[in-house]
Image 1 (cartoon, rainbow, N blue to C red):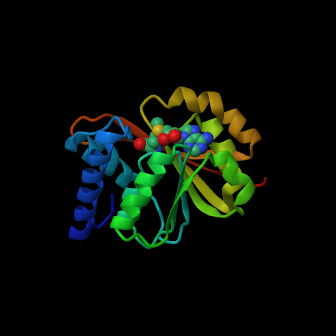
Image 2 (spheres, rainbow, N blue to C red):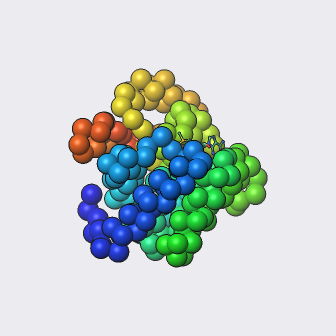
Image 3 (tube, rainbow, N blue to C red):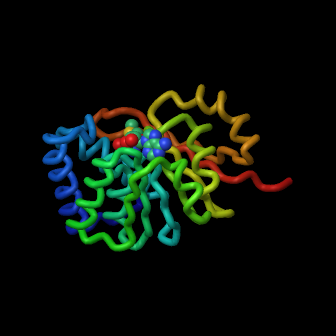
Length: 205
Ligand SMILES: C[S@@+](CC[C@H](N)C(=O)[O-])C[C@H]1O[C@@H](n2cnc3c(N)ncnc32)[C@H](O)[C@@H]1O
C-alpha cells in the first residue's frame, strides 16, 4: 500500500477495534465484529484507500457509518484533514468518541444527511469518498456540490462493478464527470474482492 504503519498506529487500530466491539454490544454500529473481520474488512480495506490519498487533500467520507474509511485514514495519515458525515446519530457519537480518545486534530464527524451539507458548506473537499453507500450515480450527484474544482471522488465498492459502471457511466457524463480508473484488489485471508473507482470532473474539450 506504500504506507508506513507505526507502532502508534497499530495501537490506535487496536483501540478502534476494541471500542467498536464494546459499543456494538450495546448499540448496533456494524455487522462486522470479529477481530479478524475488523482487521481485514474495516482496517486493511480502509488502508488500501488511504494509500491513494495525498497528504495535501481535504477528505470527506460520505455515509461513514462507524468511521470507515475515515478513522483508519486519520490514524495512518494524521495530517490529512478528514470530515465524515452520517445520517445516524449514534454512529457519529461513536466516531467523536474514538476521535477524542485518539486525540485527532483536524477531524470532524457531522450528524446529518449529506444532502443537508450541500446548502451549508462552501465547496472545497479535494477528495470525497464513500464505502458501501449508494450507486455511483447517486454518490456523484450528492458529492458534486461539495467538491473543489480540481477535486476527485473515490467510491469503494465490492465485486461485480462492471454492470453498475456500464449502467451509470452515461448519467455521470451528463453530470460532468468521468471514471478515470477502476482498481480491483483482493482482501487478505480470502475476505473477498473489492474495487476502488476514481472519478473526476470531465476536462473541457
Ligand atoms: C452500509 S453503511 C456503510 C458504512 C461505512 N461506510 C462502512 O463501509 O462500514 C451506509 C451508511 O450510509 C449512511 N447514509 C445513508 N444515506 C445517507 C445520507 N443521505 N447522508 C448521510 N449518511 C447516509 C447510513 O446511515 C449508513 O451508516
